[in-house]
Length: 468
Image (cartoon, rainbow, N blue to C red; front, side, top):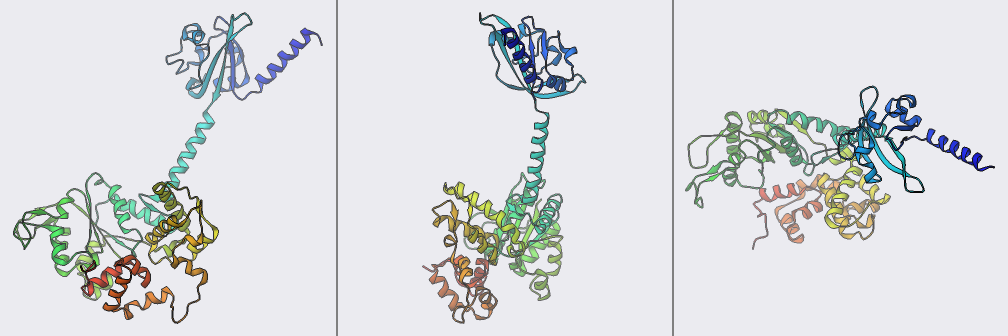
């Protein structure tokens, strides 16, 4: 093969490469005139090779050519001084008048004598990539809507209804009643409603109505004036006033005494309060969200809860499912709490073993999502590998592996059904002593929530802390 033939063959081979490249490639001679223009440049720009050859790169109207608008030729744009440019994202103007997102790069070409013989530019079309990027972002956003709202997580059909209810509640100023077992996330729902509403920039004030006696709760909610009772040494604003412009969340609303029920009814109807010890009416602008694990309608029938207040509270009810009713959400919750604990502890635990996950799916979760979160935290204390095994789980969950209930050791579900009939004050005090007055541990032993333990303590006048 002669040298000339070899040169022709190389040229044809190079042209074949350029013609089949997905990226646009064009060259310019030392005067800045376009000397070659491959088919991909025709597709990206809309200009045919016949239309582009002999023109300057100004026909592309690049939006970002070395930080300034593209000049009439490359001699003025700085490419000769820069020798080459870094790849940069910019916009080219298509022949039909619309912009095309591209990555553009340019390099100076010199001969063996270091003389400039031209410039070669490559252009990568980002149109399809950007479309894919946008679709991915939209899909991720939809996934976020489906699986999480605030700190509430779930993808089950039941949780979709809850999320829709939260959105509807947030768009109004109606009084909301959240009903659900302990640990289902009633406070999270209240928070999600508040922070998705127009009141989101104002306070969200939470009060647990079962944790205080009637007198203390009255003072806590409505405030008091100096001298209203022994120990009232100064005026004090209540939680309703503290929440001015925002939201008050009253948890365990079913525990309210008749007196507080009457006063709360007035708050909802009149939007005004009176501090304990004074008769001055104070106007308040608040939104009220309440929650309970009890059947309030049943309590109304029993005469334990005011019917007029009940209907004022349940203007818009949201009924939270137990975790047992939405077990398909357990893997999602496990993944979430594992990620939270990894950040908190610095560990890198990836998942649960198949056996551990099966135990999670088989367990009834009387403590609901809160119990699941505690179970993951328990496992993190014991797990020293990248996967949680069944022996890292709390004993009540592991019992499912060898479940063979005997009369001496009744199953937890049976304990839970019989606890109201068999539990006595002395028995509860003994359990509290055994568990160092940890109400959560006592609740696990009895198969009930720690809130139920509090209620028994309140019923029998057992102090919340061990007597000194």
